[in-house]
Amino acid sequence: MSQPLKCPQCGASEANLLQDNIYQCKFCGSIYEYGDVKPVFETTVRQQKPISFDDKKLQEIPSKIIRFVIIGFALMVIGFAATIILSVLHKTKTSSSVPAKLYKDNNETNSSFTLVNTKEGPQVWTISRRNSDGLKEVSYFLNKIDAKENKLLASQPIGNTITWEQSLKDAYRLEGLKPMGNICWLIYGEQLTGYDVNTQQEVLNNELLGKQFSELKNGIAEVEDVYDMDGFKFTTKDGYTYYYEAVLNKLYTEEQYEDKSSLEKTFTDKTEYCFTDAERQQLYKITRKVGELVKKPLSANIVSSLVKDNEAWYKRVYKISSFEEFTPGIIYFKASVLYSDENNIVMIYQNELGEDAPVILKCLDADKKEIWSKTGEETALFKPFLKSTNSVSFLNGSQLAIMQPYQLGVSLNMENGEINWSFKPY
Image (cartoon, rainbow, N blue to C red; front, side):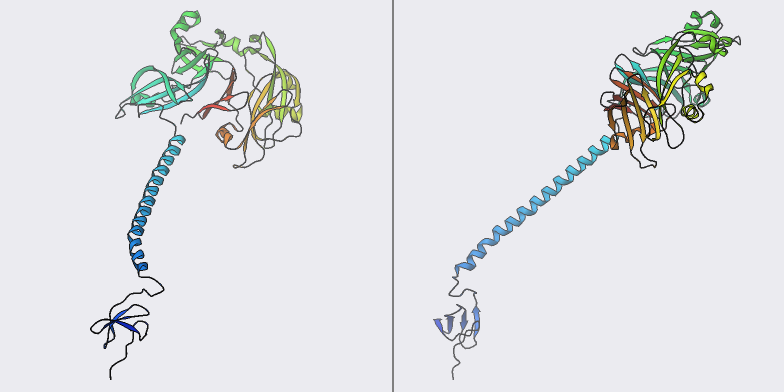
């Protein structure tokens, strides 16, 4: 008995004879051999789905592969570009946070700096030390700096090149620069040299002072800074002591200097602002008479004593005519007056204690009206000025220059408090 037709794919019994015992199922299109009922080959195409459907899929495969390749390549290009951009941004950020190199010689470093009041505006001057390769010799230079561009404008040697051993012995002989009037002074051992602030030319030295003042004709053996006068103390080689007032270009004997009251012939009225001492500080406005020669600066200690004791002695010695709290009821922390004149006061403080407390830089006028105020990231730079007792400042046109010795120099726009430039020596 012959075996009935049966499609091995769908089980249907109806089929078309193709040749010999090879049949094609009428329902699913499968081709099989009659008897063994084993498919010769099979197709998934049914009558409701034309055979062209498979061909279309086969045609789509190459385009899909190409599309995947293109997408993969595009992703690779994007990733590569992103890597380059991130690298450039990182380098830009790094380069912007690290200032450009000031000196070309890798062995040259800052020894000290100051701000000088020139016709062109506030300017940074530095003293640099240059060590030779192998640390055999040392040279010193006086430099004029463009602080905004961190660029060296001019440089000239100070003294002669010395040996490394000599530099160790001379470590404290080269003192910092001291601007007074139109001259910036430098003490190097027994040598005093004055440089014009506008030209940087040497205009005074021991030899010229000896020619100018007969008292110094035998030579200067020692030069010292003076804390209460814009000048210096000279000890001559023949053992006499004199005091030189640099701005007025006058020489005084030791006896004259000791009797300071005899020195002062002219007094002028001056309004100053000063904070009290301790943690909770108050701001006071003081009017007094100041002399031309002898400096008697007010300090937080003195103001605190005046507030606490109202001592007549302080008022008499410092010639105080009026004394009042400038901002009643306001308490400041780590405060310092950075600059004041008849019209404005610039101060720095925190409104609370703590290392993370915001630093506030503020300018008020004489009527207590706020001109401008800065805080946050803008004032983080100014931390060295907090509770400062020795900051130095001067106004040049609309530029306010403020210096914290050995740490920071800044030039501000007095009208809005914007930073023109800043300089850190180390």
